[in-house]
Amino acid sequence: MLQDLRQRRRSVAQVMQELRQLPVDDVGFAKLDTHRGLRRGLPEAIYCNGKTLEQLSILIDRLGRVADPVLLTRLTAARYAQLGRRHPRLRYAAEARLGYLTLRRRRPLRRGRVVVVTGGTADGPVAEEAAATLEILGHRVTRLLDVGVAGVHRVLAHQRALQGARVVIVVAGMEGALASVVAGLTAAPIVAVPTSVGYGASFRGIAPLLTMLNSCAPGVGVVNIDNGFGAAYLAHLIRR
Image 1 (cartoon, rainbow, N blue to C red):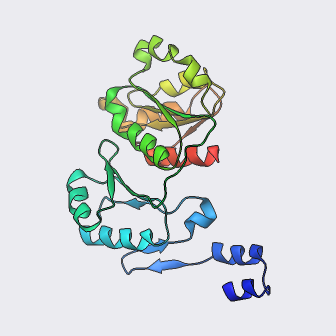
Image 2: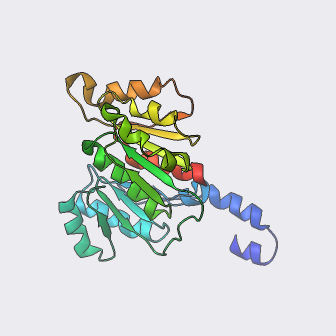
Image 3: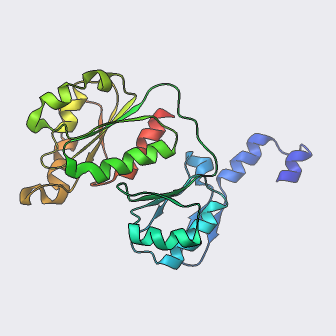
């Protein structure tokens, strides 16, 4: 294809179209989507739960050839310590449980910010997964922590930040009402993340999930329970 392009037998557009349909790197236990970055704008991420140390090490090596950044979600501190000895460039955001390798420094987007809002301190790890992912991808992030509806004046005090946001990620457990409140304060699209924080009747995140899905405020999109990475990915695509 590159020879055809050089000799003008194919156009850049034709080659790009063919590359988007290529290929898979089959490593036996996994089939890496090496061209996801071309199609989607972001490379495949590595979900660490259930994978052995050897499998993770192989995936880092293979993805590192084609992907920037390489993201490892739900990476424990103990597993990071093991991987760090094999991959010295690997970095770790502890609260976010996020490992990452970056080949080039990304300049923050000049205009606007993503605001990440949490209902309570216990929602912090999920919110930080979203915030850290966005910062690695070059976004400017403002964190508004512990501003849940039990003391609604706390979130009302940050209306200027909310109204200046390009996207707002709202992370909340318990009854999950914070997403609707925030959606009524800003014109920005809301990405709502229910968390598994709460007592028995929250059903490990089902209650806030249903509340967010039934929001009376328009413009609220909902991702899966505890899925901070998914929220960041969606916010990134919205901003692009």
